[in-house]
Length: 400
Image (cartoon, rainbow, N blue to C red; front, side, top):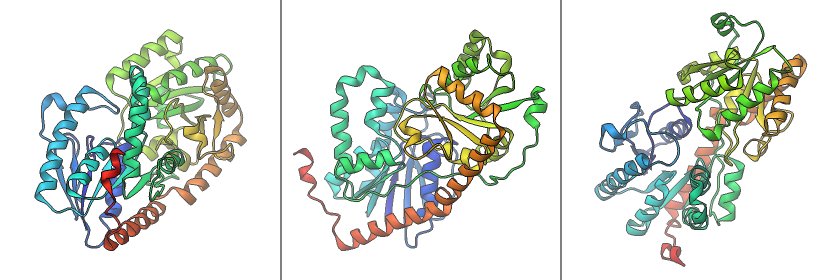
């Protein structure tokens, strides 16, 4: 099977969607007689997989440092991406297009023009993200939802990463929905705590640890405000934040200073994904303060897999998959989220219980072997449909 994989973002980089794409490619690369042309943006690290050919848009200096979410820079990249995809489709006879993010609309166009079926890989709801990131676009939300619904309805199969996105697919008439949950990427979930962070910063108490980007939807404002409240009740905890670009780090350092907690908060900047298990081992409480989005954040799974207590906001992004048995769910406001920090800092038994339960939860449902079974199962179905010729939908109905 010849597949065109459309991934409109920098690749490879150690962040959510590129990590998901790499996991998909690794599984597809295992399938016999499957060859993949991967189209991505200009920046990122090259990967080497036997049956994957990497293609990039033209490299231009002003099109670097693409951040997650919608931006004019990303829009310009998408224009170049589309024309590059057009050339690939014209030059090669693809059996299937595997499309993620906004590239699904390009896949719809190619299906209309060349009758190539596509699989939609949903890491998030594009319609929701646009309105959340750019509130002035809210008046267009019905249009965005309609287009997203059309993309779902006319795909051969939809591969959402969480239960909420699976419900979105079913609501919009998905023919086939297979939830490809995110997984833990930890190489050594049982990595021992070395105390290197305590030693580096001269700490004696517990470490509240956040690892990830510092985009507003991640809730770093909530985290700092909650930690400020918690510090009034306990002096046992220090907050360490790993990740973020320099501009965001400076912004949140200023906020920590304004809150008077600058001596209790340390920003380490980005670290390689390969060191994730080492840094998670140093934390005592791992925190996910996300405040927006319906998809479950990928970081949840390595956090839980580390065997440490995890504190999350009690919002559908987390509660759709987690219960109070696997994590401490706290309301997304500074007072009650701070209560979660305080409760975990004072209760060794609770931290140990949550850590053990979280580890078992991931081992059962969110490891690479489980991911393989889910994705191979989905593609077994796709190949069967293609061989039976059932994939030739009446695409002209898209405008009805």
